[in-house]
Amino acid sequence: MRVFKFGGASVRNPESVRNVARIIRDHHGTDPLVVVLSAMGKTTNALEELCALFMGGQKDEMIEKYLAIKAMHFEVARGLFPDPGHHVYQVLEQSFYQLYYYITEVHGENYNYEYDRIVSTGETVSTQILSIYLNGIGLANRLVPARKLIITDANFRDARVDWIMSSQAIQEQMALSLDKDPGENLPPLVITQGFIGGTQQGFTTTLGREGSDFTAAIIAYALQAKEVVIWKDVPGLLNADPKIMNNAVLLPNISYQEAIELAYYGATVIHPKTLKPLLHKNIPLRVKSFHQPEMPGSIINNNEEGDNLIPSYIFKYNQVLVSLFPKDFSFIAEENLSRVFADFAKHGVRMNLMQNSAISFSACFDKDKTKTPALLHDLQKMFTVKYNEDLELITVRHYTRACMDRLISSKEIVMEQKNRTTLQLVVRPVKG
Ligand code: ASP
Ligand code: MG
Image (cartoon, rainbow, N blue to C red; front, side):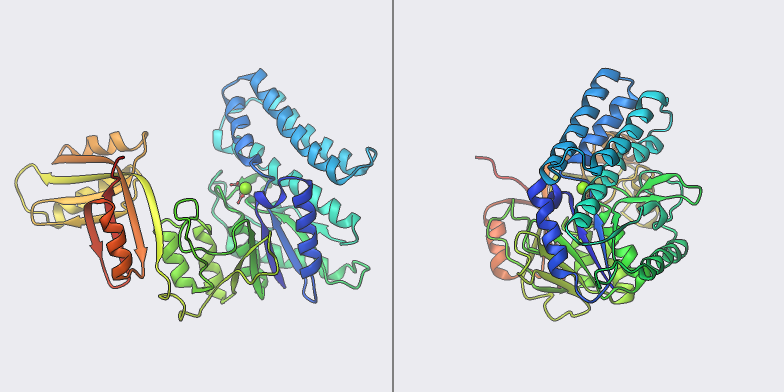
């Protein structure tokens, strides 16, 4: 059993859908395969906008947005199914009609509930197109709705997975597929949606943005898969965001632990929740390029040997650094620290870095226009607050002398922290 996950960029137009089909055909060997698919291209963003218009009662703009999303999908379909009488068009008409009916007939009340109901359409239609296309080229498959596989609570937009019920549901659905002979002497091929779940009562939920990687991990966990492959538009895991560092290099093999650390510090290649279930069952995760499927890509498994060979860089922008000085001139100790942490927790602000001295405590966090002012307001009750913004936080895993010198020479360092494996610098970008 193997699980493949394809992201939105891999199915943004007819040519890329054909490419995905080629990859599936070339890699669908002796094992059953589950393919987890995201919404096409930037569809999820567009549906989020549609949802906001729906909730805001902006009917004309909403219909316009709906029509644009629908047109984009029909355009992709036309590139794949030249026959205008092909049944794919009926299937898509029906899915879009359901969305249309909902946004025009229903009065939205609970934002997160409506969001999941509306935004999940992206994955519904992308999987319909892929599944029908694969069937048409001789890759018989079964499209199983993720709502029947990923069972969650009703915490809409960020639903929590019920691992026991989901595992059971996934195993049952897979057993059904194994029973059916696809007729080509090929092992079963199952297509499902990433990002989507369902409550026991049958309400649609979602797992949080970019949650499709996580879906792949849940399915792999339940089926004790041999491996998960995430197909991306980059060659694999890189040691830095190539948009920021043009000399980024591939990390051929790192451990789960290292990947979890990288995700914790803000690396965005893999959804952070993805790794723990795989670690738990020792299922390797490969990250491969859908442009160059023959290249090995990166592998994340329990081998730690490659972890410290290449320094990795993680950049976080838009950072705020606060320094707090107790107003009663007391030293920084457990009592006032617990107050600081309580304030951060209350406002849902995560500290990216913290440091203290006898008389002050400093913390760096992401600026957020809804949370930061309220947090500062609370902190000011007990502390004199010094405040700096527009900073960058640079984290280097497995830093070397040379990479430290390079970083330090071009920036003004506001705060620095290091341990054996990790260097973190809060810097002020040098202007000009
Ligand atoms: N389509 C969803 C998103 O863009 C889920 C995913 O792609 O992982 O967030
Ligand atoms: Mg997506």
